[in-house]
Image 1 (spheres, helix red, strand yellow):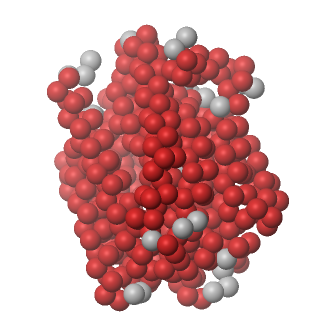
Image 2 (cartoon, rainbow, N blue to C red):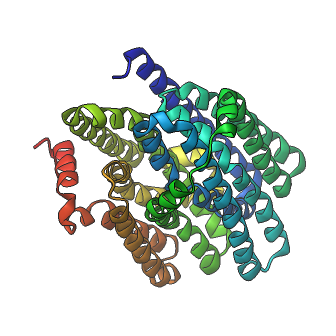
Image 3 (tube, rainbow, N blue to C red):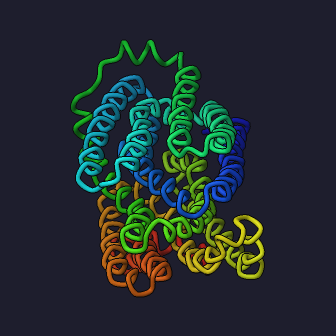
Length: 421
């Protein structure tokens, strides 16, 4: 079993750095919103949506699977890392060229097209994440945390300085690329002792094929999950324009900031819980209940606090130009209840080898989101987009549990966590 000191170090570094980055991220986000104005802020977030989507797809579903494989097959970790490196390299190339085709067909503005090329380049650093996955599996969160902290803090400082000095969106996007370079470089340095074993190891083509088959549902799931968040932004741009997108992006960034907290908690504890599953099944079940209870009630507390103090908070952060953010964010936070449950649902289904079932529920949720957006945004504008998100997350992460007969244990976990029975 794991030593308590090692677990504590992993939790403090893995969770602490992500929480600090979350706080600083909000500060940078708000500062840029004030500096850029509603329309430029909408353009900037549109580019982030495209770039973030591409980076996510390049390694979607692979993280949880890779960590699980490294823990379960620790004696063959070098072969797994070499094969994982090959897999991510192939995915990066494929995603980049597919994104280029999409932009060529769909984006008519040459400036925005060039912006998106810059935000797509970080996709080529995805293969370096194999070091991060190894550190997670070895419960060595400090090594990954250092890379995240340094790159993020340097990048955050440069974003504000560069845009304040130049008022150039292009220059701002180059900072994002530079941040990815720093992160990849530090990961490589911290994992330098792994380089020689990885180079000497043989990649397993069968493992790569099996991984592609296994992670395909996770890939489609990640596309669907990210789609539920980013689809709103793309459709708002097309139906309502960049100013409305700027308002929605301000609200959704704060929403994503909050929903990142359940993600941080579940990600940090996921390798630990997998080790419990390996040795003590009862402890595994009880820890899943505890995690679910924690993220669910934290979300309820956040909603209540924002309900009473949110209006003044938004005015303080963004100013009067973004006064519509409060009502949009308050509605979005309702869906945060289901997103917090979704962070548990995802980890549980991957741990149980039910990746296809995860794919089904999220893909149907994305379809619901698209249909509702198409009909509601033209009439109800931003509130229509938010309502679509609420319904799709409710279906994917709560209602589907009662439609799938193989989700009995998951229903029990959520019932015990929420109701205590």
